[in-house]
Structure formats: C-alpha cells, structure tokens
Image (cartoon, rainbow, N blue to C red; front, side):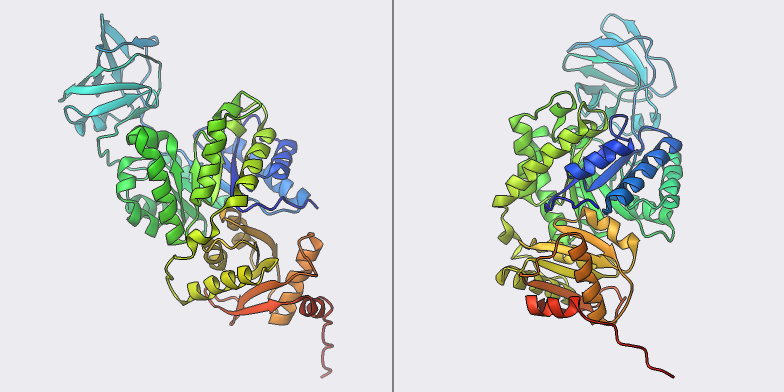
Amino acid sequence: MYKTTYKKTKILATLGPASNTLETIEGLIKAGANMFRLNFSHGTHEYHSETLKNIRTAMDNLDVTIAVLQDISGPKVRIGELKEQFELFAGDEITFVKNEIIGYKESDKKYVVSTNYPELLDKVKKDEYIYLYDGTIRAKVIEIGNEVKAVIENHGLLSSKKGINFPNTVIDIDVITKKDEEDIAWGVKNKVDYFAISFVQNKEDMLNARRLLGDYKGKLIAKIEKFDAVENIDEIIKVSDGIMVARGDLGIEVPYYEVPTIQKKLIKKANEACIPVITATQMLLSMTHNERATRAEISDVANAVLDGTDVVMLSEESAVGVDPVNTVETMAKIIAKTEEIYPYDKHDKLSYHDNFDVIQGTATKLADDIGAKGIISLTSSGLSGRKISRYRPKTNIYMFSHQRRVLNPMCGLWGVEPIAKIKEAGASRMIQVMLRKLEEKGYLDKQGTYIATFGYPVGQPGSTNTIKILTPAEMNYYLNLEKKPKKKK
C-alpha cells in the first residue's frame, strides 16, 4: 500500500504518449497526481481504453483512489487544407469561402481558405476580428457576404487545419458533435468520473450533455473558454458539477489582460456555489521541454492555489513532456509550500445555502477551533465532501462512502482525501470501521482529537445531522469495540 502525500489543492495530470504506461502512472500518483485527464481530441477508443486499464491497475497496486476526467473535444473550428504553408504579413488579405477547397495563394498578398464550419461566416460582422492558428495571427473583417474578407494585422505562419477563433462573434453552434456523442457513450460505458464539455456557451449546452449521460451519475465540468460562457457563467454554474478555467482559448476569446481577473472571478463563484473549479493551461508549460519551471510559472501555480482553486491542471507538460513525473512533483512542491500561507479565513464569510451547510460549516469551524487532527465524514452522495471542502478547514478531511462511485470524484475536491468504501451498519460500528481504515493507511493519530460527521437515516443524501468529537479515549473505545453475539432464537 502506498500512502499518498497529503496536500489540499489537487493535481490533474493529462496522460499521453509520454505518460500512459502503468509504471509512469504509478510514478505520477506517488509524485502527487490525484486525477488523470484523457484528452479525446487525440487517440482512439482502443488507445484510451488501454490507458484507463493502466490507471485502474495502478489504483489497485497502490491502494489509492484516483479520479478520471474525460475531456470531450467539442466543435473545434479550423481552416481547411492548404496547398502549402502561408507566411502572412500585416496588410495581406485573406478570404474565407463557404465551399470546401484546398487553400491557395491567389496573388501577391492575397490568400483564399475554407473552414470546417462554413455557416459561421454568416454570423461574422464587419470590423470584428478573426484569430488564426490558436490566436497567433489576427485578422480584421473588411467585407462580409457570401465570402468573408479580412486584413491580416501581424506576421505569422499558417498551415493546414489550424484553429480559428471568433472572439467577437456569438457562433451559436452545437457544442456536442456526433463524435462527442460517441465519446461520451464510451465514458459512460467505462464509468469515468468526470466529463469536461468543451466550448460551452450557455446552460443549454450543459443540459444537452447531461441528457447524454442517461442514468449514469457522472459529473459534468463546464470548460469556460468562450467570451459568452463568461457572460453566462451564473446560469452555467447552476447546471454544472464543476467548472474549468480553460485559459488557452479563453485568452483568445477575451482581451489577454482580462484573463487573470476572470480566473479569480470564476474561482470565487465556484467556491460560493460549492462546486469544484479546475485552473488549466500552460501552468508549467516550459517543463514540456525543460527540467525546471520558470519563476513566472511557479508564481502562476501559487496564485491559483491562493485564489482558492480546487485543482491545478497539467496538459502537454505531462502528456508529451520530457519528464512527466518530475513535473507533477514540482507542482506538488509548489502547492505544499504555498499552502503554508493559505488564507483559510477567506471562506468564513460564505453564506449558508441550506441547513446542511450550517452543519458542515459548524463542523469545520469546530475542528479548527479545537485543533483537530482531521474531520472524518461518511457520505452517500458526495455532497458532504463538497460542503466540508467549501469551508476550507485547516485540518485534513477524510471521506468514506458506501459506494465506490461516490469516492472517486472527491479526488477533485480541495482538501478531501477519499479513504474507502464501507458497508452500512450502525453508527458505532461505522465509526469503528472508519477509524480502523485510517489506522491501516497510516493517517490516524491516536493521541489526537477528530471530528466525525454522519447522518440518520443512514444512506440518505443530505441527511448529515450529527457532529461527534472523538477524543483519544473514545477512539480507543471504538477501535476495540467487539461485535455483540447474535441472540439465539
């Protein structure tokens, strides 16, 4: 059994060619990874099935709980094929046509290309901007109609199938493609924990994704990477199980200097709504090729932690980087050091949503006030984990459930350590089992004091109504409690 390093902010590592073997996945877990991302913009179902098998084998080998996030690719807008790479300069003119063609150079300083979403050309207005190659080339629209003409405003190289962004245009297209539907069906079949939905624009996009899950209780993460998603964030949060601050495309869709303040705003809103938030994209990008992170990247991770993010994410750094394990280890060290100055009191003023909030908020305050070694909680739905995490207690949070499917997603909650699945029983017996599991894993300090929360009736979501202080003497009592012999009939 491997004892995980306790830290409160979680790490989501993307798996890819550099990291999808069993040996490397085990190394990533030991280095501090709590969740793994399967990027469905790349790879076949067979490829991802093999990676998922390795994740679950690693979980069994190390006796740890890990969450799996399936990132749904969504409708990536791209230019079509080009006859050759274009070197574009300020003042060049580029024409977007609706019919599918192989892009070509029409004459000196004039180019013609197509796009995989030609209907978007009808939505573009004069003087709006189009960004090419993931934001590296900027073009201003000068003429609309059956074709759209734009003037290039900066130098850049453009090759086939590169991404297009319309930061001023409400594109209003289905964010779930036919491929996405098939990918989500794969995720349901293989019981992934989280589904990240790309290019979300409004709550309807998330509700449509929810319908595709059917009866499966998977968690939906809204990737906030479009300007209209930022504008509609409140309605999106209400129908989502979490959000991701996807700073890559977001940095193209909105002015780049607004991204830091938007990040802070989104994290605060997620904290208030009691849902997890992931901060993503280019956090330790230089480590894709280098052994060490830049000082700016280190500060970026630290600031996301201090903002209150639940999770920080690695993309290409862990998927195709030179040393994924070193990268995760670096991120874990940054988190651990930053959490020494974490502003725990920033969540003291959160308003209660319901009576359940009052119970969990009181439990976390009590734990901090008496210097408890941990909060031990039993949950049937995972809601208790979210509620306790919301108040950011200084002490450790150890979660148990009667169902394995409830435990895994809690790897994405700040400060929560999902421990084990336990059978239903009376309160005394369940306290005993929870304490023994903590002892087995090396988490239990028998000389310390713990707070336990659970509810009656057992197994009812949202029924937490009991807070119990476990002193060393009481823990000794429960640990040595013998089963009562069955009465003879």
